[in-house]
Each structure stands twice: as C-alpha cells, then as structure tokens.
Image 1 (cartoon, rainbow, N blue to C red):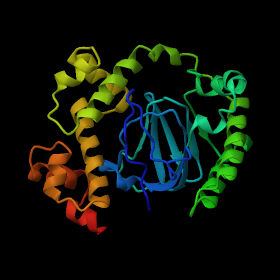
Image 2 (image 1 turned 90 degrees about the horizontal axis):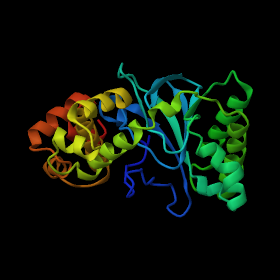
Image 3 (image 1 turned 60 degrees about the vertical axis):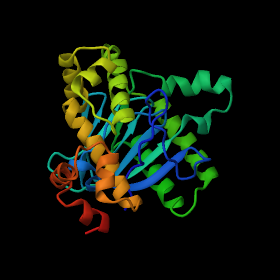
Image 4 (image 1 turned 45 degrees about the horizontal axis):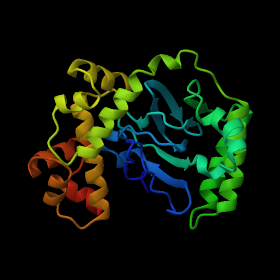
Length: 292
C-alpha cells in the first residue's frame, strides 16, 4: 500500500507533486493513514485539484481550517491552492484512493481557461466539496475516481485520465457550492503559506518559533494562533510532524542509516528521533523500515 507523494516544494512553497509519470500531470495512488506520523498527514497545498475516496475506515479532513468527516464510500474534492490534510485523532486505520489532477490537463486555450477553468479553480468561495454516494452527481464523481484508479494500476492511460478529468471538472463546475464568508480568511493564508514554506525549506536545520513567525511577518502569538486555527497543531509540533514524515519516506526508500536519517531530517540526536518516531508510529524506525 502506497502513501501520498513525498513533498517537494516549488519556489512559492506549494507542493511539486511527484506524479506517476513525471511527464504527465496526474497522481493516482492508494494510501493508508498509518503511513503518516501520528496518523496525521502534513498540511500542504498545490495547484492540482485533489480527490480522496475512502475505501475502508474513516478520516477527518481539514481544508483551510474547516473540518470534514468522511466514512467508507465517501470522498472529498479539494480545490486548487487550498491548505489541506487528513488525519485520525483516534489513530484508526483508513485506506483511501488519492488522486491529484492538474489544471494543465484541461488548459486547452486561453478562452477555455478564462471562461471555464478559472471560474472553478480560482473560486475562493468553493474551497472543497464533500462527495456522498447518496447525491447523484457526487456519486458519479466517486465512481469516476474509482475507475481512474483501476484503469491506471500498471501504467498511466492518458486518454482515460483526460476523459474522466473533463467529466469531473464539468460536474464540479455545474454544481459549485458557495462559502459566503470564505474571503474573511484572505489575510491569514499568505502568512501561513510563508511560514509553512519556511519550515518545509529549512526542516533540516535548527528552527525556532521566532524564525517561523518572522517568515510570516507576524509575532509569535499570532504565528501560534494561525497554526492552531488552520492546522490544529503548534508550529513546533508541525515541524516535528514534517520531519517525521520525511524520515518515514527515507526509511522506506533509501538505505541510509537511522542515524543519517535523523540528522538529515533535522533532529538533534538519534535517540530523540527514535523516541518521537515510536510515539507517532507506534513502532521503531527499524521495524517500520522492515514493514513489521
């Protein structure tokens, strides 16, 4: 079972998604919450539209500070450039399909982008849509997501992805929800974006609260308040979560020693890293690496 992609950042602190095929902007994989530290993914954002389909279990999802609960058979659409992450406070397992579709897939020409694509992906009043099988158009999207996964298990099928992307984008455009007070958060997002970007660019080095708050051009109190409001964690806990997620990727995908990984991910010593890892994953780094 694969987890969501390793986070690589663009210059604007958005996520540079590790697509299935680097030459075709679509990410289609199966994931599980236990692959993340403390059953909590690290908050991130990207230009791509993100879709989650719950295969088994339940997951809580946060989108720009709003909380959405999902159960087996349900899903969610997260619009472009919105902060989001999934988690389970109860530390219960959840299996899901994660699909990211880039707007570039349907950037046919300037007319289409301006009149049909941007009204969807640049709509600040439509940050997300919970997808329920009980609602016909939402169930259609859920089935499209399922088919996208099943048809792209071995190799990417570009025509299928383009066909389904056009269908999904049309359904979303025709049924856009409206969050009337969403623009009240516009002052928060740039500051939070800058602070998260600072952490993700500098996680290998020593980071203090004042460094994070300075990156967002705000005081430490406001910094802490924004992290709690939108990410439900303190700034320093976010740092540790991000470092642990990077360490998990290295454990599974490299032959680096545990000590090398600890220092590479910004931990001051190996014993502290192992202690935090055990608390978050309920296992040791060595057992995690071996899949036990």
